[in-house]
Image (tube, rainbow over all chains, first blue to last red; front, side):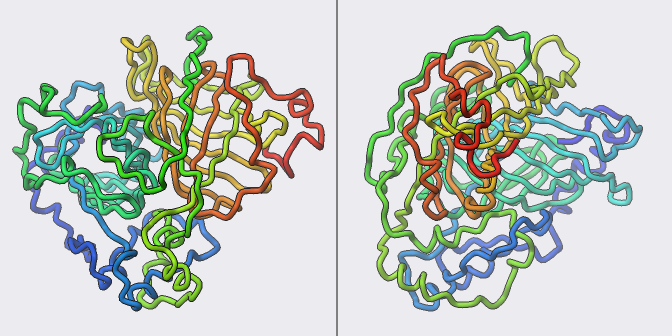
Length: 249
Length: 257
């Protein structure tokens, strides 16, 4: 999602493009796949610590009490949702606004962007992403940048999911799910951003809470991320059977 | 909220009236925006909702031990499924052209609206009956794409609604200049602390008059002052003279300005 127009970023691109395996985080951020077990509740509370605190009051945390009471009907269910974000270079995105007016990426640069979104199985076009990356700092020792990203994922008639958090061009991150509309109304949780090829192919795994069961259409088995992943030709061409209803364009 | 080169257009008021429905309506078919119905019946709050953590929480929530709260144990025993109370709140956003808003930053440097253009804005906010000045909206619209075939644009909008001493509500989502949309309620402060839900944006006169209907969850009962009979949206709506003149009885406490 960052600049792809300067020579320095092209070098960055070549050094990243084939090292997909290096994007697996070595830090202790672990995805959880179990949905219902009460032992996962403490994990479901682990939030990416990049945003500044807003709250002075503490929300109630009785769900732990619930789990201790062995109640099953109201466990905080986590639903996983995978999608691919692919920049097919036909949306004029990204738009690197070098407002810092410096030769190296600096605080002040803004990068609005919008890419295409496909189901995790890459068989259906879902919609688009749309939002902005705020360049925070250039991490030359990591050969990349830190951005603060604020954007939304559009799922056609289903609605949208809004996120906010850190985007590091050199490693995977978790962003906060701040809300949603439609079937995602009331959604909260986090989403793992896994970069396959900077900045053209990204694989997201949402860990969503607070919403009803997701439609099967969105829950097909995801294709394993690799540099060569591509949506099916029918999905790219938006053929009727290869899109979701009202897919966002 | 867009470039001033757009002439004033009257958007026909889409008369999507929310109907009462079971609070457990499951979307069995992909819902269109018109089928999104607000919940007006109140029911036991579920623990899931009372525990909704806004994802922008500080790291202090990464905890290992958790204090116990017995009230939610009680309500948990009463509630059967997640059926949470939704409160509706309607407000009018009106651009009276006296706040220097919007500011169309044509950073794409293209002649047609393009990705890269940014539109910071701030307008006035009134109660649904247009009798009291509440505060302001404030935020930014990011131009995503120009939809020439629809005669308008898609923006990603990130902004807040300020309710004076009551607090504020933050939202994020799509703003399409040619049709109604639903934005996500991402959080709030004051009486809106811990809020979740969505808000319907209904454009009356682009880009000067907008009617919002919030569907809010996770907060206490809203003050009566804000729950009023909403004036039907039509192109000629405007705030009462008293509200425009900020007469004391026609504003909420410490309305935001």
